[in-house]
Picture 1 (cartoon, rainbow, N blue to C red):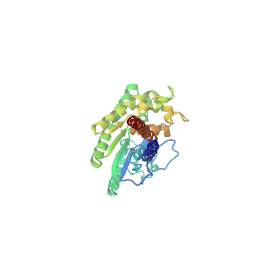
Picture 2 (picture 1 turned 120 degrees about the vertical axis):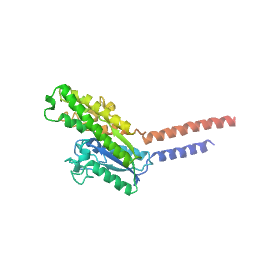
Picture 3 (picture 1 turned 90 degrees about the vertical axis):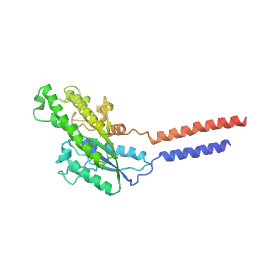
Picture 4 (picture 1 turned 45 degrees about the vertical axis):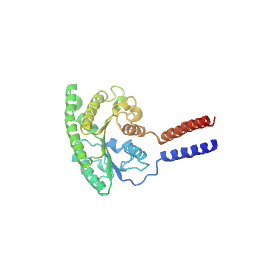
Length: 306
């Protein structure tokens, strides 16, 4: 009897381990569309271009979706563009657009490509199941990069940043309204921003003291937009606190120039978007559960025999 129970336990454990391991990726019917700027495009140290953008947090999020879908990975369409602002998203003209191989030219706007990709994916019988958005950081860079910005008084600088929030809010409203109409059943996630400049010593960059409040204001605006449209907002500011130098290239020579995450940082972002237990952890939990059940069964059998 003990040998029979032991053999059954081993067989069940093997089944749990097998079921917890994702199958090889197959051509799926679900599509995941990533929208935004260089964070969405997955930039690190600019050495991996051109690309279709199946990298960074986009690739990791797609992998996590596969782990929840029996190993079937979604079709990934990444339309992120380096330097994209919430305004250029609709107007186009970003010189870096062709670094993303989905773009036929720099004149093609991300919004134009979005609508055409949605149409082609639906025509192919695919479901747009997930959309992520990372936009707004470059709007802030445009403000602080304007000639004479740092010659302004602190109050004037704050006024210029506040003025940009209205534009960001209006553009997010337009984008989220459009997505609600075109892909009403998609899970839309709006990704907030982190403050890489917190890793720098005071005085190392004029943005050290300015970035924190400005980014938190940006995050408040886009979080509000996400809530208004029933989208999920993902806070990146908090998990990056005291890890900015560890998660990004901000300290790479020359310090203060590359704000992009490294691979570890992109992993943190992906986990913030969609926390998923490791398959090995789920398998171990299953095996432990079977072990507990087996011991209970043996105790019950022994009691009956007595």
